[in-house]
Amino acid sequence: MCIISQKYLIMAKQEAGFLGGFSGRLGPAVGYMWNGKWCLRSYRRDVANPRTEAQVAHREMFKQEVQLAARLRWAVNTALRNAARDEGMTSYNLFVKLNQHAFSLCDNRLQVDYSTLRLSVGRVAPVEPGTAEWSADNVLSIGFGRGSGRGLDYVYLYIYVPTLGSGFLSSPVYRHDKRITLSLPDEYAGHEAHLYLMAQSADGSWSETAYAGCIRFDETIDNEDTEPSDGQQHNGSATGAATAVEADRRPTAAADTGPGRPG
Image 1 (tube, helix red, strand yellow):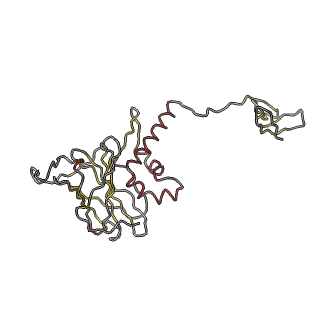
Image 2 (cartoon, helix red, strand yellow):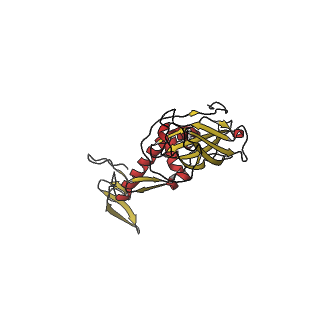
Image 3 (cartoon, one colour):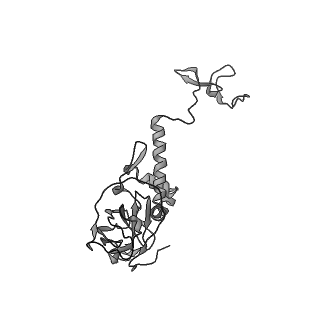
């Protein structure tokens, strides 16, 4: 039976008549049977908002992970959108779920292993990244191999600069083009960028993310009269860096030979 008092809404089942025991919660007591006898214990209310040190750290880490996903939104909202819909969650939450291995918290700051981030998931053959090269006129070029993928797959380059919190997704090229070339904003000079290649098939399926390393843009072009000192290109190597604030900025393609962006 259900007994209702003015102070409590009780859900308890009465046993053995009016004077018998009961099971379930009745006000501040909980009835239960133990070794064939009816017993009572006090009701222990769970803490509604626990704030142990570990729980506070977990919440802070999750908050900063979602903030990172927002800074990476050019890739996250594009390459994870379909997979997130299938999982019944947002693209940001799927990003956090996929990348727990890459996150840690130190002195209340999120530490990220950028070389292991997953910005896309799927069964399309991944891209085989080549060496990234940057020229002193702020043009970034990276080659890639076709691997086992189809030549008409789309290939995207995602660039993220942690110290600026700035990232962008390139326009696609075909996999058989084997190279993406972009003109970069001048403010990227002096900063390191992490490079990621992702492939998409014509039916909208994606590959796993291929990390293409970290490249540092070491020279600044102040004006059109400035000439590079040696005319050489600079190769990148993998490193790590801290996150910062988002700054939306997209580059223009220096050589756009690929398809238009698929819907």
